[in-house]
Length: 109
Image (cartoon, helix red, strand yellow):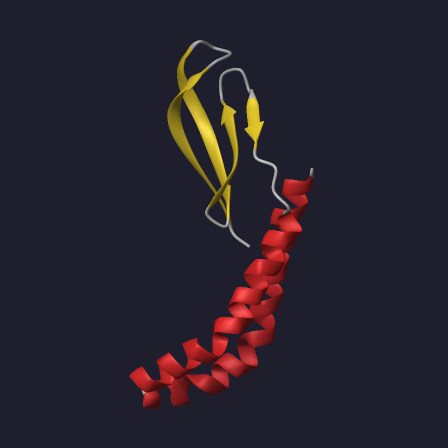
């Protein structure tokens, strides 16, 4: 699960003028918009666990086709890299889970 932010000048109905806002996304979907002047925040209600489960399902269900595509494009490179990838996979999964946990915790607050 990925979280990102960007800044933009938007019209604030509390300030009655264009002010800098922070726009937050979770998995490329709008999460919140916050005015930096008055700190008024508009949050989008999402079922964060549903988003997380959908992401995990999508990654698992598309893995066979992604592997097939990869080895068809470059079999020797695929065979060369596979031992390192198999060994590093548990570490990469733990990093992904920790990042997702941070996003879920921040969103649930």
